[in-house]
Amino acid sequence: MSAPRSDEILYVTGGRPLRGRVRVGGSKNASLPLMAASLLTAEPIVLRNVAKVADTEVMAQILGELGVSVERLDDGLRLWAREVTSEVPDHLARRMRASVVLLGPLITRAGAARLPKPGGDKIGARRVEQHLRGLRAMGAEITETTTEFIARAPQGLHGARVVLDLPTVTGTENLVMAAALARGRTEITNAAREPHVQDLCRLLIAMGARITGAGTDEIVVEGVPRLHGAEHRVIPDYLEAGTYAIAVAATGGDVLLEEGPAEDLPSVLLKLQEAGASVEVGQRSIRVRREPGGPLRGVDMCTYAHPGFPTDLQAQYLALMTQAEGTTIISEYLHDNRFQHVTELMRMGARITVQGRDAFVRGPARLHGVDVVVPDIRSGAALVIAALCARGTTEIGEVWHIDRGYEDMPGKLRALGAKIERRSAVLTSQPLR
Image (tube, rainbow, N blue to C red; front, side, top):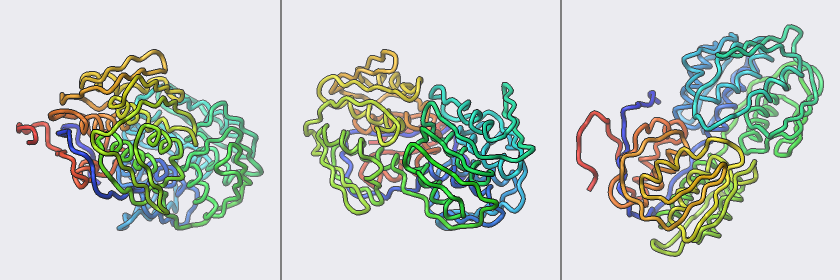
């Protein structure tokens, strides 16, 4: 995948229901820590169904700089970390927050790590001190400057009891990877339970790690002297599936989500049904239907750690609720700056009031096409959903954010009947007809 361009714009003309079928790709949030786990062994790791998004390309480049051989396969990657260096390149790490998940595996494999403070979406505080506190309890010496983390483990890492004050996903992933090769037993209490945390544990177990409790709030890791190579298939992306399910509920239509992981979306599918959409769950699929113009009811929602409603689908759900009857309250409990999409939605005609961590959405609103700018990955998906519902054509700038989390969203939506086109911003052209 080539680097995303910041000078491209999506032109979306609304008013068309979505119909057909779309395949859900590999999980981005699973692919990144799985790729980082390749640092834990000197033997090859083969990952199938890796998410084909910009963030995984950046991670592949980072691993290459760390000494990992990266071979691109038709359906994934072959990663071979025979020798590993400890310094993560600054210009790459600052392009995504997930680069922090390299800290644990580098300390335990290389005995040291130098990691620039990561960049990525600015959606509020994601407290890295929980990662650092846990790694320090395991024997790491970590210095934090204004620009980077410098860590070393002169005596190696040892097991410890780590209590997280919040169930941080990347913190849990960092600690599990660090503990896999640490001496003794590590207990992680209040661990994150997200599907991608469970998928990481499955790969580590296939590599020879001794882990119990994945998917619960207490994960126990018994350290082993070494890990070996393995082959693993990345889980389907429940956030991509949830995004398209919400889009169908918003626009109306009938779409089958192939490889849709319904078991990972209990709260989302329930909310869609309560709002008026029909949801049918197959063995490896999700079908979402709503007649265009059919009733859509406002249903309050609050984000919460898995299996609650994912914060990464809050923006999309808020866009859906602009089309629902009544006043809906959306509460964001996990991040303190995750209503950045609200300003742009209001420019499109949405009626939203934000008070602290609550957004009050009054609908249905008659949205209209305007020029908007994407502030982060999931806000970008929300703006696309709103544009699909709007009258006229919406011009969406900074679409490289969307590329970071979604594989060819414009192409997949076009296949479902949407009017959506990607063009260079330097070209002058008329909106889609």
